[in-house]
Amino acid sequence: MTANRILSTSRGTNVGSFAPMDWLTFIAVASIWGSSFLLMAIGLDSFSPGLVTFLRLASASVFFACLPAVKRTRIDREDWPRIFALSVTWAALPFTLFPIAQQWIDSGVAGMLNGTVPIFAAIITAVLLRSLPGKVQVMGIVVGFIGVALITSPTADDGSNAALGIALGLIASAFYGLSVTIAVPVLQKYGALPVMGRMIWVATLITFPLGVLALGESSFSWPSLTATVAVGLLGTGLAFILAGRLASRVGSTRGAFVAYVIPVVALVLGVIVRDELVAPLSLAGVVMVLAGAFLASRREA
Image (cartoon, rainbow, N blue to C red; front, top):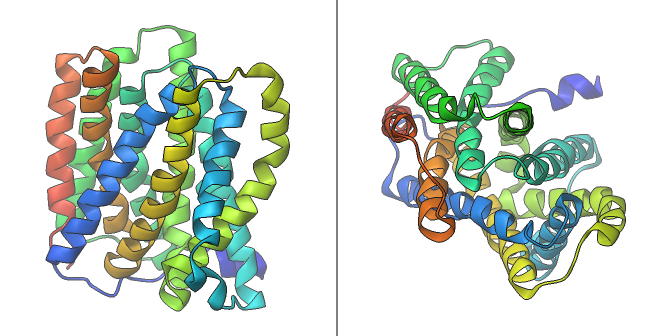
């Protein structure tokens, strides 16, 4: 019974074309999350993946604790299993998998892999709602999938470690797709702040042992600490609130399409800040994922 209650979703409150506020939220989330991969790469210069994950969540926990609106709203007991599931699938697991993956792949590639989230979200949403997305949204999914394939293809021959990094990134993205889908009902019921705050608090407790174990494998540096805390405050704090509101308004499938713009931000920052190389096929893929994001924003049939 609990599993059936958790594995459910609902439609967004706005099935029309994106309103200006939807676009502003969309761009803000994409920009913050796109930069998160660069910040995590800086964090990994001195910290092990487990410490990056824990510090990110701990910083976000402090952020949410400073917001009175998070604690004012009471979550019904029947919704706590879904909150716990989101803590695992939207935070603890993917936040752990991506830093591990970035030991073998560039931040730009990690951001590109995150662009598969809309594909996973669309599939899971279609199954749970027993309804396919609109034709235009399906076209956006297909175009975006081709774009992601072009983006990742230059790394296919980089060796087993790169392949493992890509696999971990895809698994993390699948968890993101599941999470944004099953989060919609509680986001619409309580709002983004109470849900996201409690989700992050639980995820911090889950990853605390991992952070303690990672201390012995890490060294200290101010750039790594500053970058990791920034990921927590912005990428896990502010951006999660905005992403929750977006998914509540436009639905999980269209809300997840924000991930299609993340690779563009990650790619540009990776090139500018860390001198990462970009293959021509990856640039072609960027154009296609942007086209997919535009198609997703159209009115749902």
